[in-house]
Image (cartoon, rainbow, N blue to C red; front, side, top):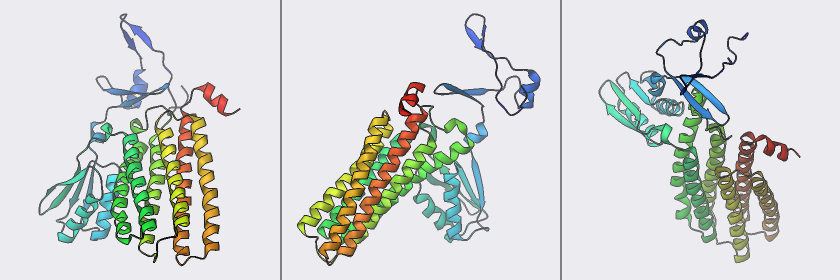
Length: 343
């Protein structure tokens, strides 16, 4: 071995007829912090095996923040950043006053799986109450999709019926989407410093989950934007326009739904490529509808055009999800599938 930081190849040996062992030179082991009695963990990653040292301290990551150092708004942002960075316990020290305490509680309310565990005159402790190792990114993404597309459908319905009150309610659903995105972002950032948490070896990594969650979050943002349009329109759109707009919205959501379904299941390249084609068709249809709105010269034409733009973006974000799934499919594929994809 010439590179001290490079891979070290050793042969697996049979000991006693029932046990496989791997021997390490004493000098190399001690140079890398290993000694007799130390524990190591083996993590299967597809056709790879990741070996790490056990680190109980890493499992109980604690971040300490001084309440004197930040004003309340910044303190709330620091608490959120510590959560996303993977801290399990966040201690706010320095006798936080009422404003600081309220800022921390407000930040915690926007996060998933954490709560204020204790509060005294001298410190406030925020603790993660869930075990991230038991969470499935796929389940979180599926929940994000459900909330996002439900909000999207409700927002479009609010526009078509001129229901401004229903449009305003979309904002609360967008907050839920943001909290779920924060959970995915936390897992992604944790994987940057803890390689044992980066996927399961089938090609789908925490970065893929983060990329997809970002697209769903953006769909949620556009759902909120569509909801705000419902507050501005004066009259319900004419029936033909409303029908076309509704059809376009259904098709745009289908791109997102089909992309995520294909990505979280078998990740078949042909299916994912079909979703990309579906997305292109929706974008083309949206371009045509935007022109139709211009020609109709409706009183609320501009407002409706912003809805069409949001539907275009929705389909494009769905295509981004499909592309992420396609990359994961090829990354985790057997060599024969990679060869087939390159033909």
